[in-house]
Amino acid sequence: MAEEPSKETIEKVFEAIEVAKATGKIKKGTNEVTKAIEKGTAKLVAVASDINPPEIIMHIPLLAEEKGIKCIKVTNKEELGAAAGLQVGTSAVAVTTEGEAKDLIKELSD
Image (cartoon, rainbow, N blue to C red; front, side):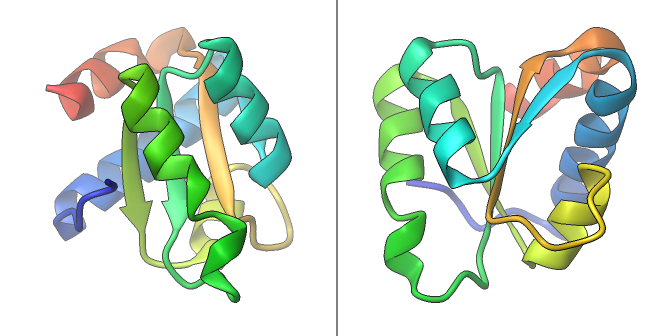
């Protein structure tokens, strides 16, 4: 299950997403993130903890755990959306190609 991370960890997740967006590839939204996990292309998954109803994203942490992918719960969908370069909030983001965020993601996965 996605653990409750520290503020420092959450900041690192946002930074990793921003760097990956600029130098690699990310997937945004529940459906795209689910597909990335199922295909095994996701390297890091972040889900927003303020999604209503929570059933929308409940399967993501379980699926990620099954596939051995790090899944981290972040504070809210607006911040997650902003880190992903969106003007709106998003329920989930998956980093599929790390780009220059490789070290950050490795650090978060340990």
